[in-house]
Image 1 (tube, helix red, strand yellow):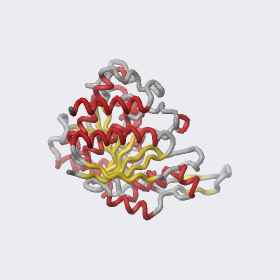
Image 2 (tube, helix red, strand yellow):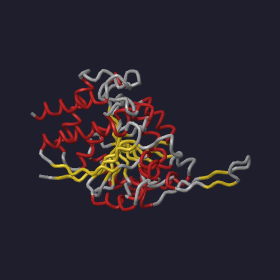
Image 3 (spheres, one colour):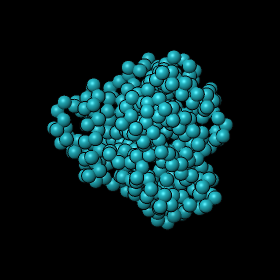
Length: 353
């Protein structure tokens, strides 16, 4: 029996509630598909920082390197300085573990959840491959004359050949696994000339993958196309900063942040899986948050761990509930957090019986 070592960081706000439902689904999958779990729950987040002034101890962080995967809830709380806990936990996980792929599937399951008129599941089925360890997010900000009317603030956008080449190659390889074999590069190299590194590597690497049809869009045009003709996208690759923006736009096309999940990957090594919504502290403890994004993240984690049958079963359970009308709405409060967890577990068990 395979036993998977998984670290769990429930985090802030609604994180503990949605992670609890994700873990229920994970345990049910393990029972029904014959694999074992060795879970290590870590307390890090704003509550822990307020109590101890500790964000992420080095010894605990180092222990993650022996894990198979990490499941993360949500990070962020207005009681902490903006960005302190986020950078200290999610930023450190991405950068110090070199989780260089941020993988965001965007798949609409029922047209009633799409805000675009006349668009259905056949129109919204794409994967965004976002570079995850470079760009402005990783660079330190610099301030001159801070707090005065002469203040100047700057933060560099830095790209390396290594980081750019590996994310573009991963995107080509991802496109090869899909029926359409179509890859879009999204950058802004006409204005941010440093991003010509992306344009040049993309053009050169396309020669290695002649089966993949390619196109190049500047990020403003890409955002327009995602609204006008989402069906024109299959796989897209982009920078860290632009990827953050276009994937949230894509999340709305599939029904909102409550269903959107992502993987932060270092292929072949410990990797991180999370919902992409915020911590929503106003809803914490009320049992009203939608846990589907976390459950979808569990499915992505199972796929990465090699539990393909279990991953597919979880995906199918969620899809059945959304397309059958059992889940009436994705609005906050329409279903209790635990109610959705019950439905997914029951559907999963029934399908495995």
